[in-house]
Length: 140
View 1 (cartoon, rainbow, N blue to C red):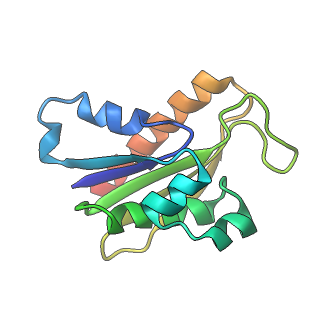
View 2 (tube, rainbow, N blue to C red; view 1 turned 60 degrees about the vertical axis):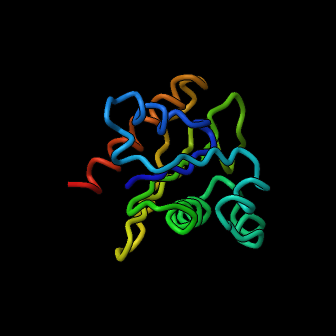
View 3 (cartoon, one colour; view 1 turned 90 degrees about the horizontal axis):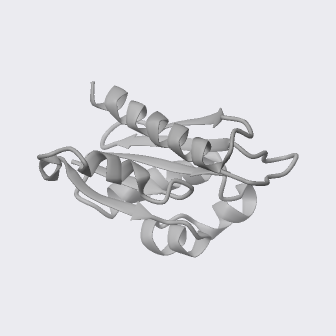
């Protein structure tokens, strides 16, 4: 079973999964946790992790994916948190997206991808596709 924990993509990954006929056999749920409060309440992300690293960080992505496993019937979960734009900062530029893939009994994988300032829609689509690729590799 699969779960997703999404911030900047707002549910695009779980929507892509559930577009496939028969997906109810493998998709458990999707968490859309756009605010920090939602990340804390729904996924158990620790406030001190958010304070120390910010929402756009591999540390928060890890806790989001692990929280999705803990709060679902899933065996595998992918998470996304990033800055789709417009905007950003010198420290966290537009197009920076952090991902995590968590599987029961295995170490959680995290990574950051710099998509660049390619526009909000493009960052979100590229993030969705990258997360789907992570899931595919995790299931292989």
